[in-house]
Length: 223
Length: 59
Image (cartoon, rainbow over all chains, first blue to last red; front, side, top):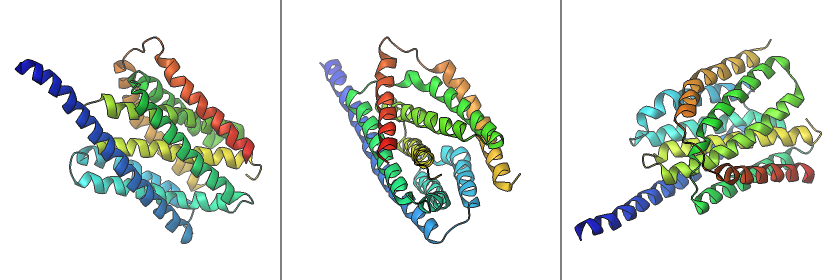
């Protein structure tokens, strides 16, 4: 009887743990997205120079690589997450300012913002409702990201607009795959940590937004 | 070449260096896909592609 009780209680405890990770991740993600948007608005208002984008992303990457893995399991991990997302939001300022200056600028920024929200909610909702395990995509997604980064590095020197557009399109597809992969990790990976999951999902959303902004900017004929 | 280009190139290079071991590990350790798994992933991604095309047409 005890064994039976245990076998019934165990999945229930696992389900509670999974729900807790999902709830905490989405709550923290909402807060960080709001904070990031505030920082981006502040950066636009004070008209930061273009170099801000590079320095902010560089600073955020340093935090992700060296500080976050050491703090993810402690309360200071939350401060690090806000540091990362705040920096990345602040870095968006000069980019948003450049797009907002275009004739259709506010429309482009608004469409990219709304489009990113629809893509994220749709894909995350799909992964949560189907509860499919997308862990098989891990190798493909990371290898794909590596190829995209090599392409982006080459395009800094090649300066080909069509290649830049292609890279943005591939980034959107890869980040869509990463949303499925990360959302399914929250359900199936018992060791998933909500601080790490928040940063992963934030990076997916950030990259989709920037790529969508670039695609819409280039195809609207104003870029 | 301006500082933005040099900075961007260095940042992307650093990302490649940090991502490479992770990608190698993921390629080794990712579980094999079962029949139908890829279909379940590709369909929503294709829906995203369609949605982006719709946004481009609408703008």
